[in-house]
Length: 590
Image (cartoon, rainbow, N blue to C red; front, side, top):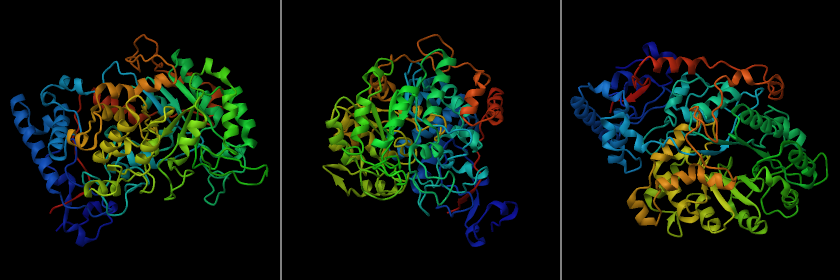
């Protein structure tokens, strides 16, 4: 009988439950790069290995033995290399469907993965980046979500923060690691500050140009659990993750030290006549490259009462929002140096509560606003995904798809996203952005992700979809770039629902070329962080030493952290170490 023993401090299961379990590191003889059964951190009871997971495991083992023997490698040695990753993708495709581009040649030669990997000359424009000012410590919840179960060891998060109790994702996992490179990484305030941000975006990913956002979210006073909505933009700027001035300053710093335009910056939308003064000040002082607004944020001032709270807002409110549009439209001179100045980027989706209104993310306010303001391009962030479903948890949507219920005009009804595509896809100045919508589904809900991509391609076409990563909240953007480049929509799904193919050409457009057109930038890839000459130049490795005292002061950060964990990992890999693929937790013996 299995007992708590030396694991008592990290187990919350009863002895009766433990009798049905075994330690994952003792049960796992395969050590595949991808787990093949649910692993519990000791807090929840894992389900037994499913029939599909057994098929995946047996197929990975068969490939490892067969190919490893031909290469003179043992199973463990083979699975620790790139061939093991290929074997995992191949096995998953055989069992679950063709979701990932992988060739059998990758089993034998590491270089064979290059045709399916993101090309070196890929131009990547990440139009949704985030970081926080250095006096703030979070939010850490998204990093924990992306990191997976390994986050439990070194953070307050002991379970998937978005997982409804007892549920698992499409592949049978309660807490999948979306970004394997973050396994074991520390989750702390430094993870979201300037130094880590630059490392993750410009050194650890292929991002060529990034667009820095700042959310106008938050209640006042800062950190008060009983806080109220701000009454004006001054209070709001005290609680946002980055102020408008900080956002512009970070852009200026990155571009100065790189000697090229590697970063753009959003201005912050505060609708309402009383907020026009702050909007004008942003234009004169910060020169935004485009604008970012949050319907769900308490950011609109609808009256002249200095003590009334700001409120949520909708895009087509002629009294509250249209004066703000008029101010932006009146500054055509900004287009000369900031060609994306008329891009109105709007957060819609990932609603914090199940309320079906435009203020919370429903797209019904988009058509009128887009038609009334044809000189603007409305870039709808998250593509309205995630209304009326558990936050970042797509199980109800997958259940509807598998049961073939809840269709809208012949396709699965993905909450708000399908409606968005069908009502706005033919409006030429509306663009769909996929930040977090893609990231939260591609690894955990690939069937949902395939329908999401299929519908956006069907209704918007490949020229009006843009990539954003929502990083560094989601870690480095690289894992998303690689996942998108490999991802495909199964042929049978395309045939049945009339979805276009997600071709390499379409992926290049989505990952960068479409945003380059929106911001009138030249699309030249192959220089992001590799030191080669070109239009976009690499940031210097000593960027930390170049952060001036005034910038540190503005960011409310007296010093920058030394990322000793990342340094140790680089030294570990440079020494030729191979991953063990050992999991620590509990698995069901059934």
